[in-house]
Length: 240
Image (cartoon, rainbow, N blue to C red; front, side, top):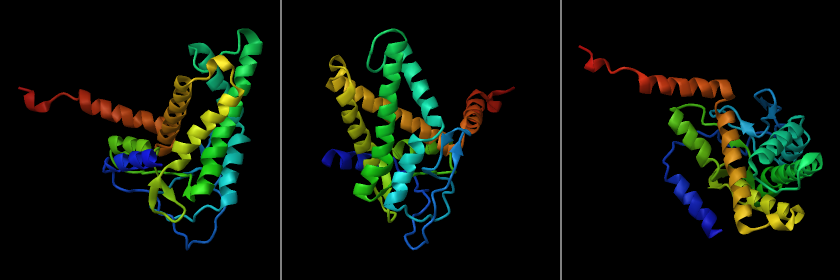
């Protein structure tokens, strides 16, 4: 826990203005909002409006988030994309060549993703009374919003609103990675492989935070183009 709190303190050092939607325990209970990102990926775990107070999630709603992520139509697609990537670049366990090896790798990734959603959306948040949702910053410079998405990997919010270490990510990813070792080939189990798996989950989750922050790839491309135009704009002061 000391290490996790150290991460928490370091992330606060980014000095990003708090822009999360406040959690108001006085608000009446509300159903989980059925939202999507990029028309495909579930966005139930994202608070879209940073200025509107939201009610805290009940424990059963946290498990509902995990259930909806695991049994969503995007789950087999996401598992397939992950499997193709792993198979192509040689990341993750090797179950052998051909269709049988690919099928076993697909099954491994499906179990890995399911356990990740279960631990990060439900089990760990329920134990630590943490809200597992991503709270969009919504405004500010591109840099501040990217840092906010990164900071959100380390800093979460309790069910009553105050900031706290993001145990859902920091512990949830570790628990999911440890569980995945139970059904890995013995040659693929090592401290280095476990850290690699943890890092991939951390980086992937950060990427999805960005997608939710900018409400889709199109908006992200627009921001990147605006920043590129500023950097490549000719300096008028040096013109004759």
